[in-house]
Amino acid sequence: MKAPLIVKDSVGAIWEKRGNTAWVECPKCQSWFPASPIMLRNDVPPAICPNCHHEFYLAAIVPRVGE
Figure (cartoon, rainbow, N blue to C red):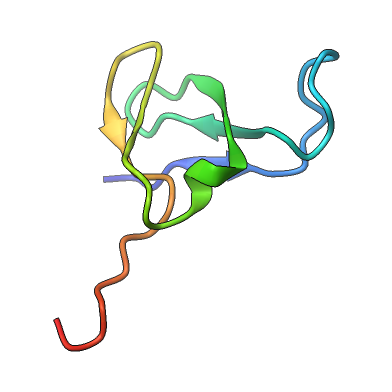
């Protein structure tokens, strides 16, 4: 499966403050949607594409040491 493309520090929409939004490309349907930078952490639930409802993680899942 292709990893999602994430663009940080993008200009975004006029009403958004710079740095508060990451634009994410769904790996399934290639549509773009804004996501909170918090979603880029590896300990958060998966993102869900608002277009095709595909569920995917924005950050790499790193196994804990010893697991």
